[in-house]
Image (spheres, rainbow, N blue to C red):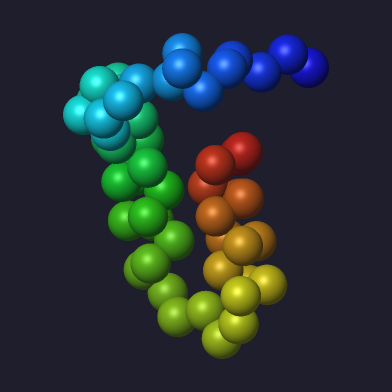
Length: 52
């Protein structure tokens, strides 16, 4: 896998695609509907929403 050099990254987070924030909000809103007793359960819930 080839990675971009750091000088190619956007200097400010506002330079990122607004869709990124929308996608993240969808994942957060669905995973935070229920209480997760531990980190393992939280990670499983995020994975489930991120990769259905």
